[in-house]
Length: 218
Image (tube, rainbow, N blue to C red; front, side):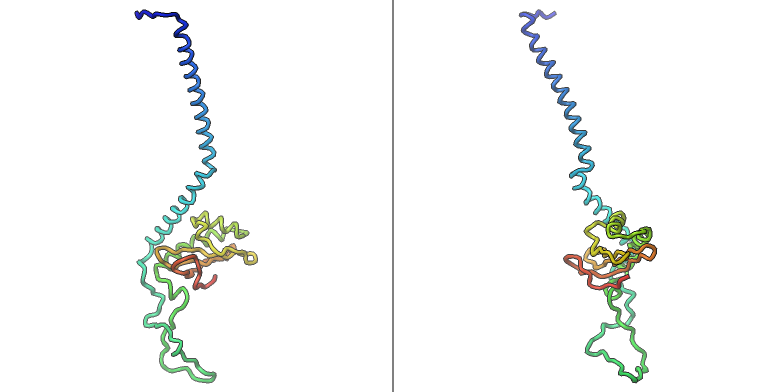
């Protein structure tokens, strides 16, 4: 047995100090847990979650675009352009005067204009996938206000950065979607009008801010 020398009062303060330190540590641990829990609760609806949310939405949207592109042909082919059709030369265009008979020779197919001339088969295929799901969702909106249309498009995976020109048109709402990927020019022109909602392809500027250059409005 160890022989403890000295009065007990010399060691009692030390034990009390250790006990006090342990109690303080316990209190601090409890406070730390409460702060941590509070921090997580605030983080659920706070800045940390909000800062991560756009990244998550963009990732989901990108996955959607990638899936559609994999289901479509390679870019570059435009089967909507008639074989042998050439771009019209304004200087060579001829008009038929009133009462004049048209030429007997077969007329060459007209060169397409607008989206049909500028979008290839891949664009049309990708657009069809987008159109199908958007139209189906818009047809479910009884009162297609711009706010409801935006919410619906967000729910489908289209972030606010891709939604443009959203405006009321009577009881309907018109909008454009930026569907450009990898230097493409595809966009969509939409009309939210309940059961008669429609979405058609359009053409956007290849670079820079979103700007529609050609469209056939629904």
